Image (cartoon, rainbow, N blue to C red; front, side):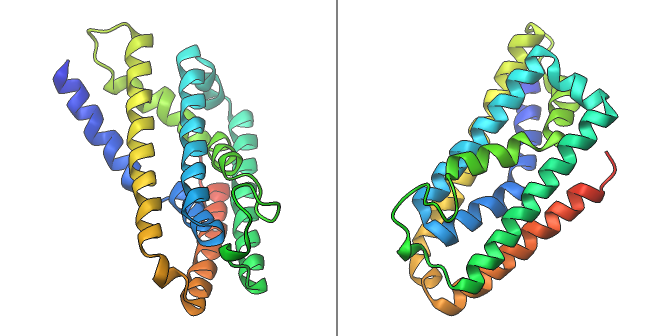
Length: 207
């Protein structure tokens, strides 16, 4: 059983650290509203993973993964949301919005950070495919399937929370550099373009 968990830890760890939409969303929140909002965004992302995990244990994620129409709808909604976030980042960057003008988490200009993280993950059908396709192959056969899947989902959520949370704190330690107007403009534009690019990739990638 320990061998199975070690293998699962390696696979989940690798998938967690690979840059993707989650990291781009956290970067955007850190640039626009500071590390506090970035950490709350990480909380929303982790909640999204737990939601998909619960659906997987209940068997609903497998239904979505097996339905081309449902998968396409969720995929396009997720892609549209990433493009929206990217366009919003570019617009705010053009206006010169700085997190020093914010009044705290969930400011009207950028919305709730927790909800942003949750929605970005809830509209990611790749997680449904991963949880219903690959994750069961990593489950220790000595445990009941539901228990094994629950443990693996919790492991993935913990790794994600730790990795993205650490990344958000790292951005906060680079606060002086990020406060420079030129640096913020470059990072803001880059993050916006990356989010739009990821949205287009999600929309055009075959299931």
